[in-house]
Amino acid sequence: MQHDAALSPVQSSLFSEKVGPAIAHGYFTRQGGVSEGLYRGLNVGLGSKDERAHVNENRTRVAGWFGAPLERLATVHQVHSPDAVIIDGSYDGARPEADALVTATPGIVLGVLTADCGPILFADPGANVIGAAHAGWKGALGGVLESTIDAMVTLGARRDRIVACLGPSISRRNYEVGAEFVQRFVSSNESYASYFRPSDRDGHAMFDLPGLTIRRLTEAGVTAENLDICTYADEERFFSYRRTTHRQEPDYGRQISAICIQGT
Image (tube, rainbow, N blue to C red; front, top):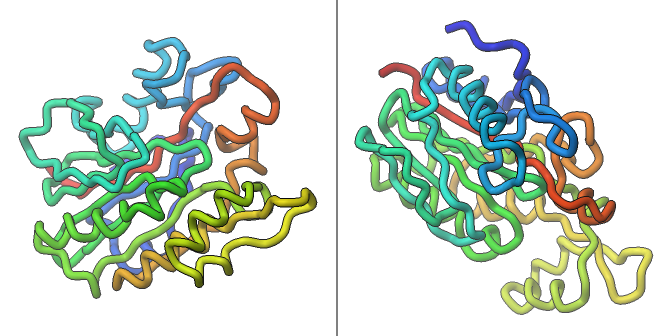
């Protein structure tokens, strides 16, 4: 299948090695879209204030990269929950409140939207089962990664065969948090203190969300990779909620990470 080269999604070397061509994936950047201004490029955020026609065209291009029509691009209304939903051939375009999707149905593109939170794509090539999760700090701490894996297992996946890759997300060097935030994590698990380093501001710390994400994935029994690309630092390629907040801009775009079992 010929992909649209203008979109230029980032690829996982772990997927290339372990998964093979039957399952296509991409961590899409801002490149190749039609949005303008604050949303310049491939903004796919239905929750943004971007022109809806632009968002729909961008989403159509993402689906088309996989050889699928827009109506086969499945996304959810993300609410920072631990919830994963199973998508099958009856998918009707609904966006339930959840933060992860899994499927064993070829031709359905699973997508999660991010702008600093972690997008994680999953695949078990042996069972032909895939997943996609949106994990900010609430999702990672609350169990969305484990919920995604559990849902894949119900479709026939095996933990020891599942590979997972964390895509572009905010890095510790750009993720400053307050003392109450740190305490929330340490109260959950004392060893999580290792994911915080003192910042230049008193009472604040720099948080390693990618590090925690990879640990949770590994402890859940899957093979995991971190692309180690920071959304905050790379404005040319990625939207960033925190960068927008620091600039006091009125809104921000969202990029998409997506995966599909090839076929119909």
